[in-house]
Length: 346
Image 1 (cartoon, rainbow, N blue to C red):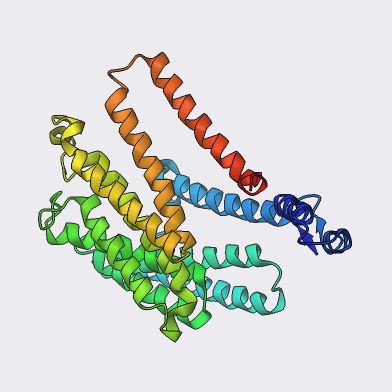
Image 2 (tube, rainbow, N blue to C red; image 1 turned 180 degrees about the vertical axis):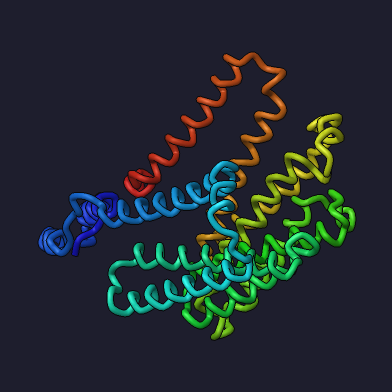
């Protein structure tokens, strides 16, 4: 069996430790080490990153094309295509890509990333079809949150039909976009909705999505999509909490700039408390996602407060000296865990 270098190093360390503790004989260790070999290069990861970069560049390229006025003017002179026709052509192209991508999943199961790249292209064409459908029926400007909600149902049906986690992620992204635009539309695009600015609104949204993922994890029809829903819900929740700890419940930047950052300290306390609860739950129930999110955003909150409270008051030499020392301590502790020093000292 071929494994990554870091996994091979970890197994070597553990086997040597068990041999030193006389839990395994030398023959057992030799036989186990011969059962795996280290990959010379992680081609799978290179393929994954390459397809991600390719898709990102494609989106950037399309965006650059759409904002170039000269190109758009030139295209308008070449033809005057009705919006409904563009929508139908985009939907047809998306349908063809969906068909071939999921056919390839059965015939080329090992080509995971190229299959996902084709699905991603189909999803983009679906979004384009829905956008031009909205323009053709004259609702693109009046109440476009309805179009986003429509895309949620379209992506949801596609995700269940093709059992695709990638499409399901777009369901959750579209659901978040609909929530933000719908609350904005209902408040007539005021910065507050029921007294909440956007970060606070998405704290509620992230909490509800995370709770739904936990409550529905035993539902058979939802089990396949539960991990992606749980992670997306945690992203919404913790990113929103971090933004709330920075901006508070202020919707106007001028109003926010007029108050001291110390006056919003209670939002930072709430954010840190949620991180602590997430770490506790993760450790108690062996939930890696909850633990990692809690630890990551707890450190992010601490360093954010450090920059907020001491950037202006401390000399920059002292500021970065303390910052360097803190990262050195974290790195040293992580190094001990990585090298299994806590086991060797027992």
